[in-house]
Image (cartoon, rainbow over all chains, first blue to last red):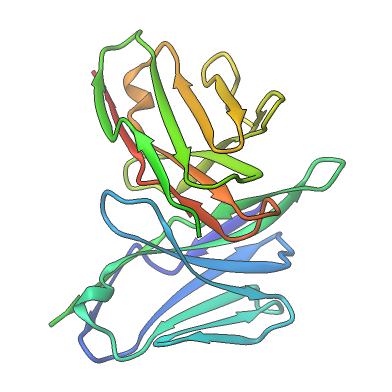
Amino acid sequence: SQKIEQNSEALNIQEGKTATLTCNYTNYSPAYLQWYRQDPGRGPVFLLLIRENEKEKRKERLKVTFDTTLKQSLFHITASQPADSATYLCALEEKYGIQGAQKLVFGQGTRLTINP
Amino acid sequence: SAVISQKPSRDICQRGTSLTIQCQVDSQVTMMFWYRQQPGQSLTLIATANQGSEATYESGFVIDKFPISRPNLTFSTLTVSNMSPEDSSIYLCSVGARLSTDTQYFGPGTRLTVL
């Protein structure tokens, strides 16, 4: 069966350190994978998209890797700050139906806390 | 990016009643989606709201329970019908720029509690 798993429900990191979140998937072959941030009481906010032919993508203090052999994406936040505390969701595309319609499927999220 | 508003932001409803949630976007968009996020869970797609035709529902969701309207390219409604406590959840509207799996922008959500 198809599955998306994020490494842990919760992660606590000391301020200034690098936070690394993991997203593993099985029985998917996504053309790309996305990462979102969700704060309590708010909808998810798009952060980064990485395509299957890209090994790495960066945006300011964020870095995402995508290994289609391992079926894994890593999400890094360097020089972490308390303001980075949030739930982070990975999402990938799923094709379905005869006509190859697409939809986004989300992981369960990792709640990241950066301690001052 | 798109700015999305939802109404109501939260509601407490009695079992057996229905609630209609509105989603308004500040620009015309092709793709609009409705998600459910149950407590402590990730997002589950309910349906894709198609302008000018019936919504496309995901497995486990049916039109009688979750009727959807999409009268134009900036507005959609989701109704949660004949509610039970199991429907208590956050309901989120989202829009995509072009294709169904492009970057999606989410509304703030509607927190529904059914007693």
